[in-house]
Length: 256
Image 1 (cartoon, rainbow, N blue to C red):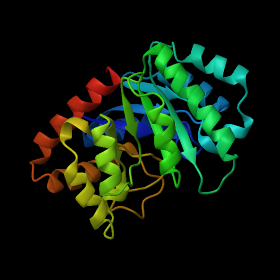
Image 2 (tube, helix red, strand yellow; image 1 turned 90 degrees about the horizontal axis):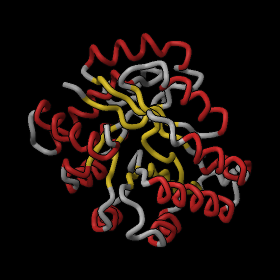
Image 3 (cartoon, rainbow, N blue to C red; image 1 turned 90 degrees about the vertical axis):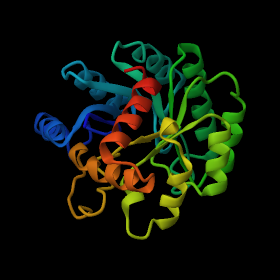
């Protein structure tokens, strides 16, 4: 296999001091390319440094909605410049998160729109984070109908109705190890709705280790094969065939 981990956080504390070993073990497991994702100003700088040093590693840059209250217009101007880096392939992660409300909803929405404006200007894919903010997320995205070329909902946990809306709008969906959990039958039914041409997988490492290795911390790209195997079973496809299809989807989406 030559799977692509489409959403990792290799610059986070749990992994940044062992990246060489993490990537080597990932290759051995059949996960041979990665996209590491920035979440704040300092993290974006780390992503740029890391992707400049490693072959088959690309970056996405953005501001997590938790951090929206700290994001200035100057920060967004800098982000737009950073996204012209040759190995930067997506805007994000960005979006809305009302679970903890670390930033006010109105501030999150403003910063979210700023990310989407950049994606339109640079004609880049967008990685969406949404948690307990589904309706507002879709309202904002609908303002950009016909303007955004590619949108993916990362770490997906939507229900069947929400999934139909996502697919009807031409968006993509990416699953983490949550889809493998024993109590995730409903999410696996949702996954069955999604054709491989619109489906990607990720670790979101260092978080969300998949079943049957949930006890392993931190999560690492090598463990993503368990997610791939689970989804291949959901789609009643041999693992190698399923892996080939979703790898093509990831390559096309991110322009790899």
